[in-house]
Amino acid sequence: MLALSRKIIAVFVVSTALNVANASLSDAHPSPVVVLSGNGLATLHLGARQSSAINTLVRLFGRASTRVTPTPALRNCGIQAQGSWHSLGVFFRHDRLVGLAFGPGRTPLVRTDAGLRLGDTLAKARKLYGGKLTTSGNNGGSWFIATSVGRIDGFLDPSGANSSHPSSKIITMDVGVVGCPAMSP
Image (cartoon, rainbow, N blue to C red):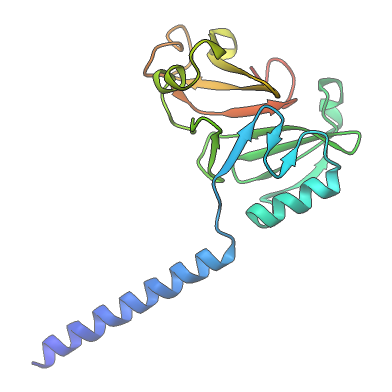
């Protein structure tokens, strides 16, 4: 009987500890699923002032994982500052948001308005976007979607000659200026 009551107490303690850990994680800053369009996010469009963009990103995702800092070496690529929120890279020029790059990685969670997510296959992207989707073998394999408000693009995996295979995975989603041409699709 004593062994059974110790097991019950141990299960209760572990269960309570897990609940407390989960509560503190969810209270910290849950990552909502954000919808990416050709001009940014629903709550943050390209062209927003840097301070406003940072405030919105902090409200959505919590503190930046990499502080927004100047990037003098990328000035000729259309970027003067960049930072990150886990797998989200943000890019600024002349105090304005010029690009968003999600991935690789799954935090924060992102999808397009049609429901395409990081990790989905090219076959699913073709099903969702039909003729609006194009691919290229450039830069190791990339994809592009023309929308009414701009373009969404990214990289594929596996990269290389077979990157347009239906089983290739969407590993990044970008809008706007996210680096030099060799760095982005």
